[in-house]
Amino acid sequence: MFDPRSITIEALESDPFPIYARLRAEAPLTGVPVANCWFATRWKDIEAINRSADFTAASDEAPVNEAFGRPNVLTTEGPVHAELRGGIEPHYRPKKVASYIEALVRPIAEAQLAPLLAAGGGDLMAEYFEPISALSLARSFGLSAVDVATLRRWFHGLSQGAINFERDPARKAQCDRAVAEIEALLLPLLARLAREPDGSPLSHLLHSGMPEGETRAPERILPSVKVTLLGGMQEPGHGAGTTLTGLLQAPEQLAALRADPDGLMAQSIDEGLRWVAPIGTMMRTATRETEINGTSIAPGTAISLIMASANRDESRFPDPDRFDIFRPQTAHMSFGAGAHFCAGKWFAKAQIEIALRTLLEAVPNLRLMETPVFRGWEFRAPQALRVRF
Ligand code: HEM
Image (cartoon, rainbow, N blue to C red; front, side, top):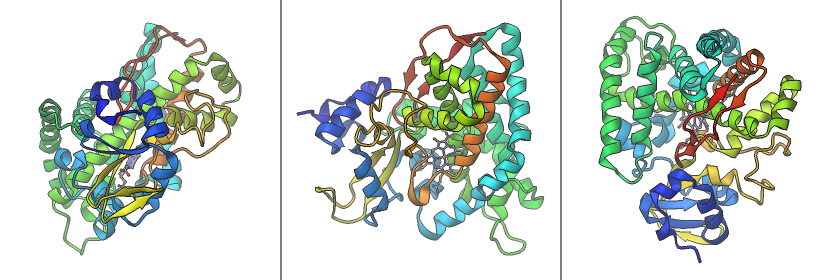
């Protein structure tokens, strides 16, 4: 019998999938001491917890609370959640996204690609996908003036706090440095936007639904701004890099996509996001004594819903470890579910598509220089994606 006490953070970081497979088979709902919470690893249990009224996202244990502060959109429910989400969501709804995404992302992608073309290759994570992701979100959100090196430093720092399940002081310090830098830049900007609204999501967060002449205090919105900056800047780049890795390691699938991009692009991106979920987990807490598919759960139990594992549940996805853009189209869980379903899903998918199309159209002979190494369990992506053209 698999003992969850044998799980280490290093094993999760380097390759969590064999651990999840054993947990799905032998201990699908169980406490994992090193992560200070329970893990739910089967699709049907995660789905049941998401649907149950006995669980809340307002989880005291979620590392984002300590890292980014409260109230934040991820760990609130009811009217406060609606208020915070309502400030962000309108700019990222499908029709709105369709009205601006090509004009926003294509020039950023072309500018990032130009030096790579001149050099005949490079690291597509650091030099292409992550910059496109960070700049697209920052410009859409109301932070046009911040350069890409600063944005990447921010999301790498913020991510250390958001994943700090093991409460590591080094991770906390790295996150605190990013938070201090972000607040130093944002506080004067928010003061100006309070006086002079500009229609950006940042401005909307201050003004939406407020009585005439009043704005929200910066401390009310800053935690949710940090959540959005992290998810919004980091994840589309990671999803794009993962998708391209899968394609480069399956050349016949890449050739099929090149031959029919209009027909196969959407399912290729969904397969990349299923195969390696950029965000691997969501945190929920039991509000009362309850039962999930036969397992008793005590009130106050914090459970990490492992979407990365649900996406590889063999009862839903045959041969789940295989990247296969031709597999039957079955919904994955990488954007979460329920009231906290990702507010940036359409923006993210459209952005990944433009980044991939710009690259594939310009580079007919993309070749991997080394096997990409993935790391992370809460956030997972190739650490580098070195290619030659
Ligand atoms: C491939 C890219 C992305 C992935 C895989 C992803 C994934 C997720 C997931 C799993 C959640 C739910 C977390 C939970 O319930 O605990 C979430 C929430 C959220 N995401 Fe994304 N995300 C992505 C891109 C974006 C982008 C580009 C934005 C920018 C607008 C964004 C903004 C948000 C916000 C604001 C929430 C909180 C929603 C709420 O709590 O109501 N995400 N995302």
